[in-house]
Amino acid sequence: MSKKANKKDTQRSETLQKVQQFKDNFKEEGDHLVQDVFPAKVLELEELYQSMTVSRLADIHTDLNIPIPDPVLFANNVSGDEAKSKKRRLEEDDHNDISGTRVMILPNGPAPSNKNLAALAEKLKPLIRDLLDHSNMLKMWIAFMIPKIEDGNNFGVSVQEDTMGEARQVETEAATYLDQVSRYFISRAKLISKVAKYPHIDDYRQAVRELDEKQYVSLRLICCEVRNHYASLHDLVLKNMEKIKKPRSANADSLIY
Image (tube, rainbow, N blue to C red):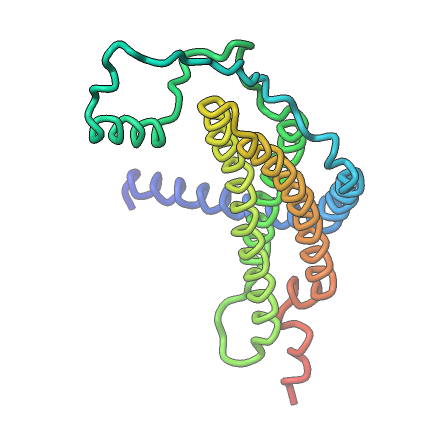
């Protein structure tokens, strides 16, 4: 055998050893994840959820920093502007209805974001990202313990696949939570721009307050759902730990006569 072939075999052997070590480490991390990390996350999220009471809704509002300007009184126009055609006036009215008042600058400075909700979102986002990572890790941990495909005695394998399916569903829902948090800021910015263009219309200001309250309730629900996902995954895995780790060993002896 040539030196080149020997070198290639050595490299392949080293690569396989590293991959096997990676799998073994993953299995150890999976055990730690289920036994230690999941319970700690449940308690952490429960504490945060209990602090997010509905009674705090009144405290989440923030001033928009967009004053209502003084009304402008127009004198009767006798300079000949009445000569504008009816069609011209209708076109200008339609344009104003669509675009509103052009905002060049806000008199009191920038309109701030809701700092209370922004701070709460910053607390939740790392927890949601952790759930994404942990559900993905749980999937791989179970996948590495699935035995080779054989005829019969596959009940334990079906338990593994069902648990992986649950973890996959949790991972998908966690991704939607992050999207939900980011969409709030875009929606609020659009409403703030409406307030700036139409400062005399109180309904736009009320719409901002309603959106803030809705977001607080939504963040509270997300916190509850993330906690529930950790708790349900932990419970599911613990109840089926024997089948997940050894899907065929439990019934192997009963098949021998």
